[in-house]
Image (cartoon, rainbow, N blue to C red; front, side, top):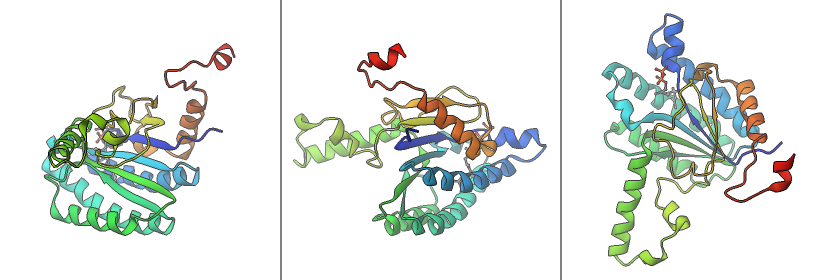
Length: 238
Ligand code: FPP
């Protein structure tokens, strides 16, 4: 089986999962978080090197204070736990997103975990938190202008590889992008990195998106003919 290097997941459907069961939205997020524990381990054990998770968009701040606060508390607990689990396995944990207006407690954990896992070599777990792809591209452009003004880079030499280095994290492009919860859109997730990604949309709500569901996504990925704009007649004729 062909294993993708970089998988992205747009985590969606926690709220609907809870509502269907007469539970609160917070209980849906808790169920999603528990699912994430086992799913992340499974994905790295399966040989995927980079996993990006869209867990909170810049737009998610529009939700009620109660829900946002619940999620922020859950993130704090989850990051501490993930640090213990994944640093042992040599996984580097990184974060993508704007720092403003995240609270100091979250920023401290982000900085601490980033620093402590920075030399790990066995894989990368990228939490997209307070993330938006347009913001990421604009932030990269601002840094490029500053470096150009300071003579650090020559804008005539700017190409895709150099531009990538100015994004929140310098990661390989996405190979497989999964969205749970039934919506058929990207919602401002990794637009630059998804240029040649294979998309897999499923109606399964995130708390139910388990190892078996992930395997089905991998099987679908393996049936795709990835040509990257080129041609592959041999495969096409099959
Ligand atoms: C989308 O479902 C999910 C989120 C906005 C939060 C994602 C959070 C988790 C999986 C919980 C824990 C994760 C970490 C890293 C601690 P939704 O609320 O938009 O669902 P809906 O579309 O059914 O309302």
